[in-house]
Image 1 (cartoon, rainbow, N blue to C red):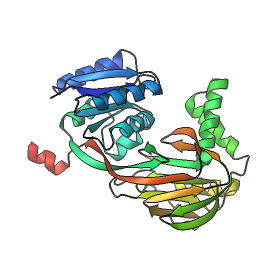
Image 2: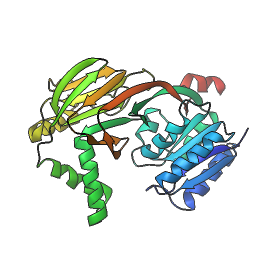
Image 3: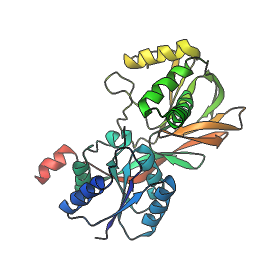
Image 4: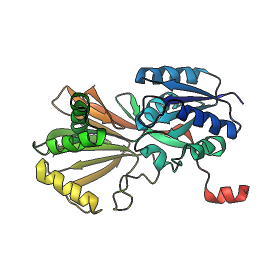
Length: 305
């Protein structure tokens, strides 16, 4: 078997120089895998290494980092003959959690060595692929303000996020948007629009999780009332697991979505990162676009034992 191509975000917060690479080498060797580990220190390098991996004879391409890194490499691997592996080395690691991939490095490498290959969906906005979700409105503004506070004031990520969120409550973050869902037009005034790759759970104990990633649907969420009171109500209902019962909260499932606005450009969040994009924003689901290694079902593991 050709060597596995492994791309690691060496600039990520959980990467420890020397230690992380050593641990990865030991884990791959313990599973009898020959891994070519590349350490990327910039987003540009991640793209360069991913492009080289696709051109190589490797059958498996692995990405290690947070959801932003995973998303970047997955975009290259999608719709190829390569199989994708995931090493959760970020802060939240939502994608790997939704796929039930263990958060421990050794156990995650075990899945790359002995997991099942599953075909899952990806989503796309104006030609850019994402694995989890995208949003406009509140969240991109909070992220941009958080980054400014980290850079200018030297605040930690979570402290900066807290103050950025409080700052948003001093304004009325309304967006006037036209939303076309599978050809049906909605006119909405909302503080945000959230688009997910497949449907997100909204009950108290599973909120933010996706039960499946292969249903071939985008999930679209928006709020009818904006301003401070609307956002506070949303936060309260989210914490109590009663979002779906709220008449001001709307969920729609679709294969493609277009968002129209008077603005020529907008800040848009993708998998936790923010970019400026031209409007209209055109989203579509990419059914079964990525072949990824996931844990075997328990019944299959018992049969192998």
